[in-house]
Image (tube, rainbow, N blue to C red):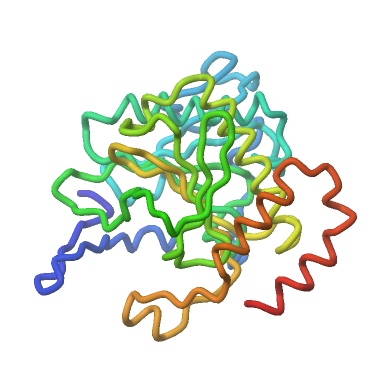
Length: 291
């Protein structure tokens, strides 16, 4: 019997997942972190779904993909970014980040005919991360379960920054301070169709965005990102710099205390700047006045 159930509200028709077993998963935030199960030396403890580098069971790996021991979907995987217990997108070599994004592509292609493939990353306690070793997750949600995820749309009221392959956008309707949508210039495709050239550019873009928001929110600030599972894919990164209040939780109407135009101005100012350290304290102090 599955450890989870998909339940639809008969009035709103929205879905929830009942997965009480997940309350037993290791969680650094509540003091139940074990010896890290994702570090080198644990390769023989469980069967891998996929890996980059080495052979099954050995320690010469670059990326490992494991079945999640506490799933909330029929297919639920953990994608371990590297053997390094601390480094992720803003600290790993660019080639390592590219491998992560290519692994996302490989796993997406593996499951795209079996449901809705949702890839997401939690960073920091405030971002819902339970184990600190950098990792992302993939879940495949049955097609009959409607996911309430906004579709990408172009608007004259957006602010934009362009890289070689991508457009960065801060929508006027942003729900979170400093959230950014990243989408390919070549639109109308699934994430599984991302090219190697786009992977390289996306790795650089994630690296810079996380570094830029380090200026505002401090090193190791909490954030999430997800990849839209349908056609016309995008990646949405959300710094978790505010807590939702009763109004937002009850109405699902978000109160955003940061002007998206200012977020984009900040990105444009620093995306290619090498001198972040000189201005780190100044920008962090000025930002805190607005949130």
